[in-house]
Length: 144
Image 1 (cartoon, one colour):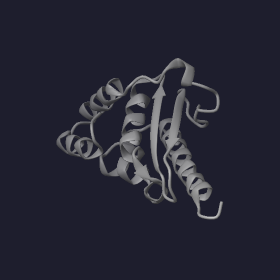
Image 2 (cartoon, one colour):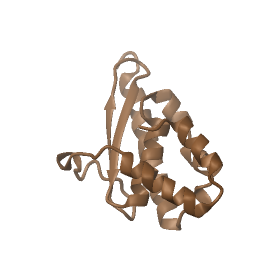
Image 3 (cartoon, helix red, strand yellow):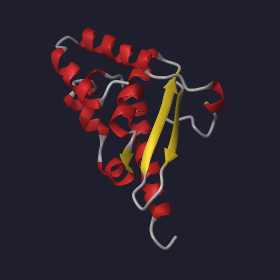
Image 4 (cartoon, helix red, strand yellow):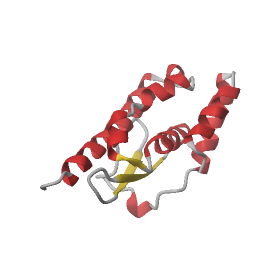
């Protein structure tokens, strides 16, 4: 998968919204498919107009590394999922809690081009990921 820095660099070269839109779709196409059996109601992100699923795998320790996977039934949203996963997956829970990917979407010039529904869905994905990281920190705290 493309790294977050590669994505940021690629977006910096794309001046036209249409080119950015096509790039987001390409990122979505490159996102590994989530098996149908993993697309459960618990993994479905509430607040998204399209169907979006997120799964997490929490590592060990006081500040665990969390790996995320995700999928969507819509091409553009699947690309947004790919960007969100590149921003958060494989990071420590404390880093995830502190990082707001909405700022990232502003810096790469996408947030202002998203419809209100898509922007709300994006915020829902990010909120869910950050909440899972916060919960992982609580559950892994010493003395628990």
